[in-house]
Amino acid sequence: MSGRETIITKDIDELSRAAAEVFTNIASASIDEAGTFSVALSGGSTPRKLYSLLASDTHRSAIDWTRVSFFFGDERHVPPDSEQSNFRMANETLLGPLEIASDRVLRWMAELSDVEACAAEYENKLRDYFQSEGRRLDLILLGLGDDGHTASLFPQTEALHELERLAVSNWVKKLDAFRLTMTFPAINDAANVIFLVSGSDKAEAVASVIEGEFRPDDFPAQLVQPVDGNLFWLLDEAAASELTRGSE
Ligand code: 6PG
Image (cartoon, rainbow, N blue to C red; front, side):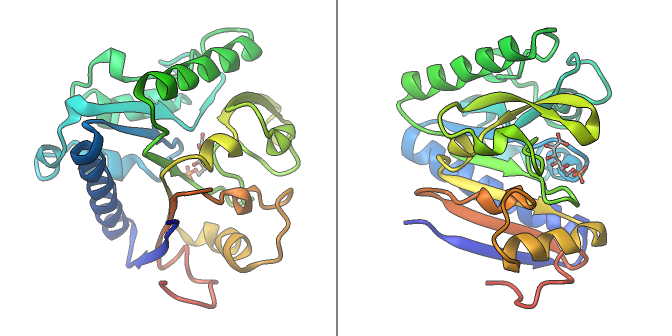
């Protein structure tokens, strides 16, 4: 059963609290059902407050973190200690404060100079996990760029059309850089997907992705369509301000 829910909150603080509740509910259900929970974290700046909240005294005891495996939906082609690294941001705000064991953190080896080797290594990590655990990812957290990209699946880039591989390198002309990203087959295989979006600068992209004409090359986030999973749009009012429909 694939559900879809849109939650609109007043601001980023309330959004982060709402996201922490959804995250915790999914994690607890997965741990109750299978004894494990796997989540692919998103990068950028929006999830920082959520990660800090999950690691805070008010929330950390809600989940048995020893049962959680962490992946990353995408990564920049930089070392893990780079200020641009999505791993570094998550480590500072969530993984470090929770003292997550390193074998539970499956990051991209983005320090490898060969981006293709990095992507192939991550593909193996994902497939090994699915095979050993006999299950798919329980949750993928995604952000949304003001250009409609998600993860590192940017408009007019090659990775949008990858139908087989789960992890690829992706040349992003506008950034003049390679990015590393899970593909839509990987994202759409997850049991739950959460878009976490805040701010008026995202309002046009949110409305285009959710209500606009289907133009996935221009708005790649439109291709996030879980095959047999739940899709949550968690928005603050500013990000939702150009939607014609409210919460669903
Ligand atoms: C990244 C993210 C990317 C991000 C969006 C939104 O590596 O930057 O994976 O997809 O989620 O660009 O970023 P902000 O949260 O910083 O607006």
